[in-house]
Length: 124
Image 1 (tube, rainbow, N blue to C red):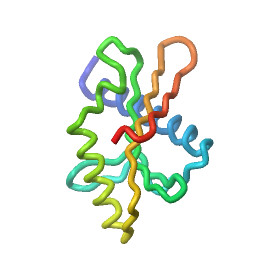
Image 2: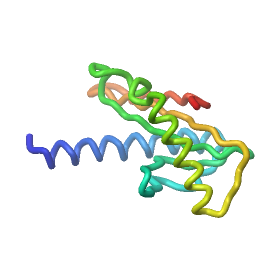
Image 3: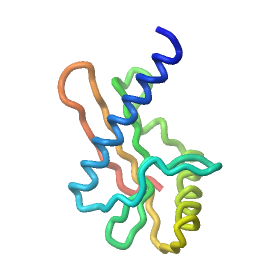
């Protein structure tokens, strides 16, 4: 398998997970403000509003836990970056929301059977 095929498969898996996560969060009553927002410092998968709270949501999608769970891919440095990105997103959009939360949506898409979605609120 070539690198470009592998990269395309990873991107497709990530896109699938983000769509699934978005549907899940919207069903919980959240409002999507932005998707895949990028700046020089990085990317936010989803930016949402949950009541008066701005939510920066990281989506991690895996096909197995052979190399760790989606949760293990989001450590302290990643959480700090996500909070900084949420501040950058607010500045770009002319907002100053006092309550910002970082959520994680872990999607597991096994080779067989249905995908599972776990939403962890307030990981940072």
